[in-house]
Image (cartoon, rainbow, N blue to C red; front, side, top):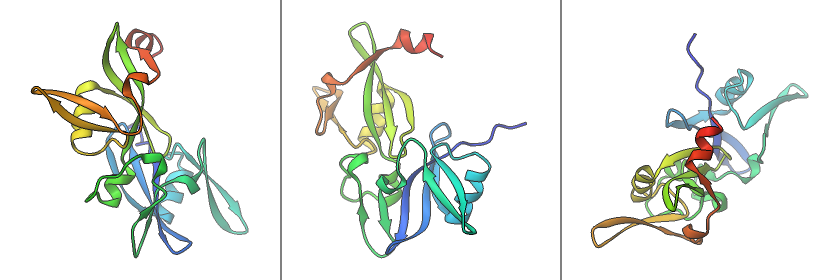
Length: 181
């Protein structure tokens, strides 16, 4: 049997105070999109949304965040802009709401000896994923990392922290990660 895609809620679409839809993201497949409240309730019921659980209350499904609050997620108002972006970092001008909601933050460095070989990134829904240094360059160049920017110095790519010093990040050794698989 094929493994079901696991999603995380990374954003909400609202009309005033009413939630109209959610933005879901699959870290392992890189798939994301806007899903209606009913679709999300269905996926939550099937256990495919890792950071949310449902509860029946007075004949209505109430969604609750697991390990995080749905209230803290970025919000795209149906008639306006994007708000509550604190946990996704700096959003570049010209970025769509969908792109901003799937933006990640670098939270840890993966090292081998004294060299940084990758990073652990976290999305708005609290999901973590390991990426290589090259993948970090590509994501930063595309404006998909909220706390780092891509630059070139003497023809070499480098990452610059935005609001953080990347050299002061907590680090995990690559060997340690391999042993903990």
